[in-house]
Image 1 (cartoon, rainbow, N blue to C red):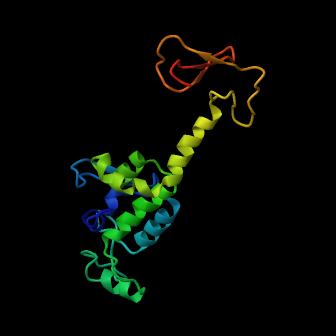
Image 2 (cartoon, one colour; image 1 turned 180 degrees about the vertical axis):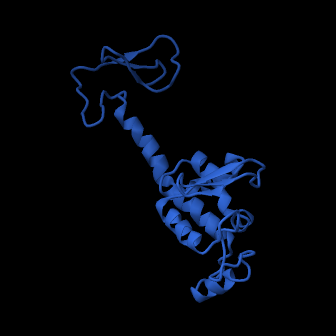
Length: 188
């Protein structure tokens, strides 16, 4: 959540049964629903004990007084943790980065971050190189021009290379149903 969303959050926007926060108007002007995982649900239940009934603020101090923002306590906490150069927005960046590294698709990351466009979320795409590898590995299950399929070596007695007389739609070889291998005429 953005700081304004977090510190403006009231309990009437938190549904602990449905495990969801509803922000009626986010930065991009639209209603946003934020799911609560089991860890965040437990944290919200602990916070609920400190709060009054009704539409009161969610984020309060130990005395039940509303927190106005992070600036009066966050830098001290960062310093006590021994961290340097760690502004508040690193928390949002870490959230998005960890989602991407866990294999969550960028459209879902964009939705969870409250981004209006996928372009804003694309800055995190480089963090998932294994996602690209997994995508190209899916091609292994298709038959190739050598007659091989996943886990099965080519049988040279069953396949022969046939030259096409007409231009092919692709420059790659294509397997046909009869197991005869077909390649474009311009392939040597």
